[in-house]
Length: 97
Image 1 (tube, rainbow, N blue to C red):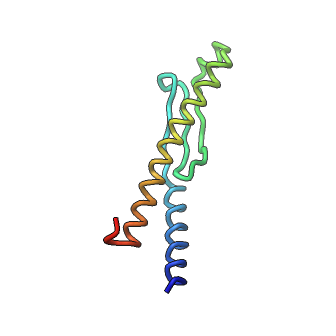
Image 2: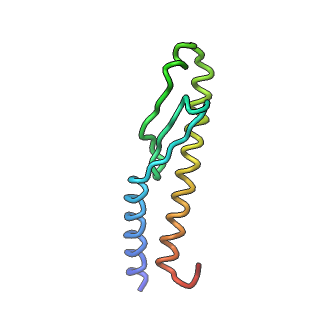
């Protein structure tokens, strides 16, 4: 009985990770001058920095905008992962959720 549940959990977790790996969200900062794209597994896919930020040569501003954009994207990815986990739990344990 528990062996079957354990296998179902492993399978559901694997499926969820695959689905989250395919999901991408972006975080932006500085009115879109910095954009970070991460997947649902919270892995950074890309980073785009507007050229005018380099022209200004303001290292502190660039660093702060990267942090803000990254945190925005990671928060979105975390929310997607939580929703996906809840959906998986609902499917595995109907009537409880």
